[in-house]
Length: 225
Image 1 (tube, one colour):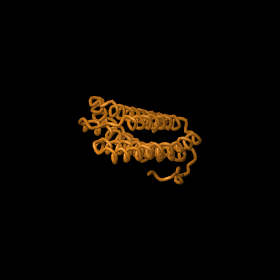
Image 2 (cartoon, helix red, strand yellow):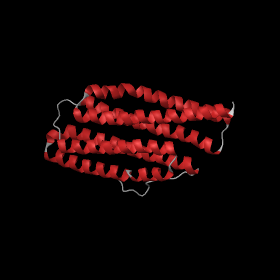
Image 3 (tube, rainbow, N blue to C red):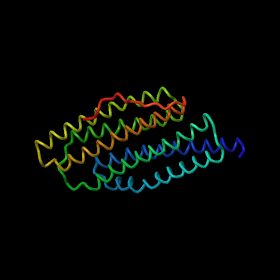
C-alpha cells in the first residue's frame, strides 16, 4: 500500500472515531432528556440507535487490526491506531450506559417523582455531555493539556453523584412512596458517573497519543459516596 493511501485510511479512521463520538454524545444527551421529560419515544430512539454505535465500534476495531497487520505502522501512526481502537471501546461502553438510562425511562409507570433531584440529574447530564464533547475536540487536536484538564472535571461528576445519592436516600427514608423512583435516580446517576470515568479513560489515551506514555489520571480523586 502506498504511503498516501495509508494516510488516507488513517484520516478516515480518525474521522470515523470522531463521528462515533458525536453519536455517543447525542445518545447521552437524549437518554437523560427522555428520562427527565418521561419521553418514551425519545428513549426508544436511543435504544434502537445503539446498534449503529456498536457497528461503528466493530468497524473501527476491524480496520485498526487490519492496518496494523498489513502496514506494521510505527511511532505516531501506530499510536493513533491504538488510540482509536482503545478509545472506541470506551465510547461503546458509554453508549451502553445511555441505553440503560433510556431503559429506565421505558420502565417508569407513574412513580412519585422528586423534581429537585431530577434537576440535579439534568445538570449532571449537561456537565457530562460537556466532558464528552470537550474530549472529542481534545482528540482532534491531540491536545495533552486539554485532556488532563478534562480528566480533572471528573471530580465534579463524582460530587454530583454524591449529592444525588445523599438527597435520594434521605427522600426514600422520609417518604417510602419515592423508593421506586429513588432507585432509578441512583441508577441513572451511577450510569452518568461511569460515563465520566470513560471520558477520563479517553483522556489517558489522548495523553498516550501525544506523548507515547501510558498515564493514569485522577487516581487521587475522592471515592464516590
